[in-house]
Length: 385
Image (cartoon, rainbow, N blue to C red):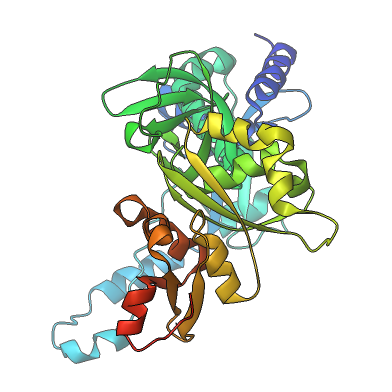
């Protein structure tokens, strides 16, 4: 392969993989540097340069200009016996920097000025040492290193793409499954959907399209890790944004979501536009909008709650489907409230296994204690039914 073919192939590779050319060039130069030392038994300092425009590869051997008298000074210095120095003074001990002149990597100042009169100690002098067959030998030797660098670069590209998607909803195809997880094809990477993160009772079919919520983006030595969930409360919020244009446009706001996946979800919504009914807009005509969300959630019940700045009113709304609820804030600092209902609505307010009041508490961020009128009177609270 000549230089032009190499350059063209590299450009195509970078376009296919979505990788910057400089990343590949840097990796190639390091790989070829190692290949040269290995194949040509080089003990000198070398660097490889790839012309970014032509693809031409050159190898340069370089030596550093040194003051050789330092070597003699070090030898004399190293003969000093420091054994009598107290350990407590170690931090004040002189730093010993060993120096041994090596003609393979060093050049004395006297030798260097004959080549370049303006040279100084610490500068380097280079010489091109590119072998005629270097392209063939070096490319074969460096192949594995370059492949590894490409993988690392691809991993970086994927991480950059998904890092800002944590907390977002994504669409993919169910590609595989094992005992614990489903693996969802997201294009350049597979997402992991643990079976503990699917909605209870739902059936996941191989090859089917699936929506999921990205809970975490991480990486390990094997590549990026995209963790997914369908039971996270954020999944419901994203579904509302997808199905209800007014939420996506910011006309309606989702204040909070409380969810017990597979059973019930409560969503509190509001709108600053007095002409917009946030609850009605979310339900849609004949329940068209909310029904699409319920279908996606495998039949999970959804209560859409109207948010209110007045905490008592908000808590009353949150305890739906219970009606005729009287709410009192008992401790504003500790966020505690008392809800009083008649016998008929008591079980509705509590819910099966206490689920309704638990979700209402999560939704409103208040600890809610539900009592009947009789229980309230026993506590010394007299409420007219």
